Length: 308
Ligand code: SF4
Image 1 (tube, protein in one colour):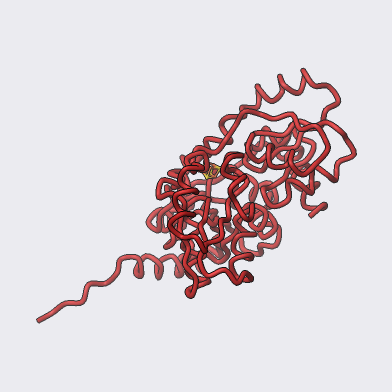
Image 2 (image 1 turned 120 degrees about the vertical axis):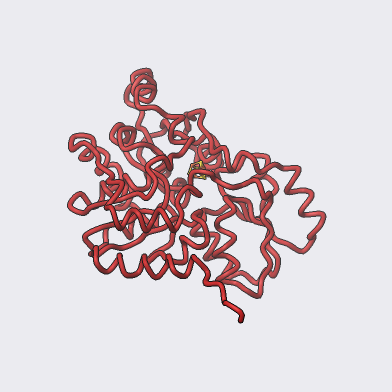
């Protein structure tokens, strides 16, 4: 007699679907999540898309599959809803490179200089900012400000990319994404030599020498759109490896090469199907932001959403 093994992911996905209905919950997932987590989400997107989506949610509960600053952003935009993150230790090292005390100190050294905060910041830092931005809209946000000089934090690489597209003076913060930092120009050159017909697309969190080798510099949402619309058959991709899942799913006739297998964000991968089940069963872990911080931080995000 033979027995057919049931894929545990199918069973977990079914439990999640049942629990979601019971809790009147919606699942939002970032493009860098594990493929199986992306597959059970109601909506998958980049930071900007998820911020927008969070404002349109009708469910009572938002299960946020991403890292803490993203779940905080969903909470800021949905103060009346319960926002849960399946693993409260899913942080962002880049975000941690801009502690609020250091940001306040730097602001004091630069009186009158506006602060543009990448969404990869804590709610407390957003509350210190004049406006937020994502990698998809950073250039537009900076160019839309009347000021000639501004402090951009925390990502020095994204700030450097913006500097190439503005005549304003960008004062950089010395933060970076350790995952994108692992993408090297040497890897790009090697892959280009192996696949001479491939187009190179990279995220603006990559270092300037990698950006110099790219054909396109795009946020993850822009990469997905570009891949759908482009005629390129082979694409070398420089961002967190989770995006490859969706690129391949949506474009089965095209070939995608990650620049490096090392581009895994361990924090993004902390969210698993099991943890999503536990989040729904036990209503954990609730994301909260103190009211005074939330009000100021929300203003910085809403200003961004008004511009884009
Ligand atoms: S990929 Fe980089 S920026 Fe994104 S959450 Fe991970 S460490 Fe933070």
